[in-house]
Length: 111
Image 1 (tube, rainbow, N blue to C red):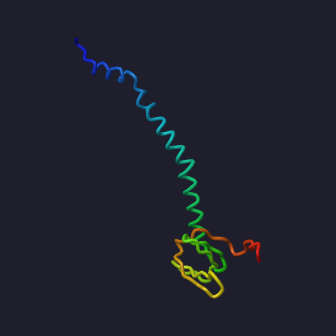
Image 2: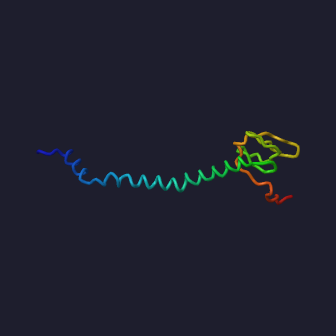
């Protein structure tokens, strides 16, 4: 026998050059789907949150990452001072703010 079985198998694969490209196509398609369905929306959300945190001002209501809800009393470069109850103030790092609501927002239903 002049041709070994291993050489015969590789020769058949070399004759079909699109086999390697078509093999990668599903992986590329999955990556594109993940980008448009998961990565891109998350980046947009983070960008809007960063813009809102940078624009926080006195009178805005905020929620921290720890779940503390308060009204902004004072804004520094890195910190915000929150009033979480009447006469109770705490300082929080700006980067820990998870949500910023404008000062002219709706009032609670029980007030």
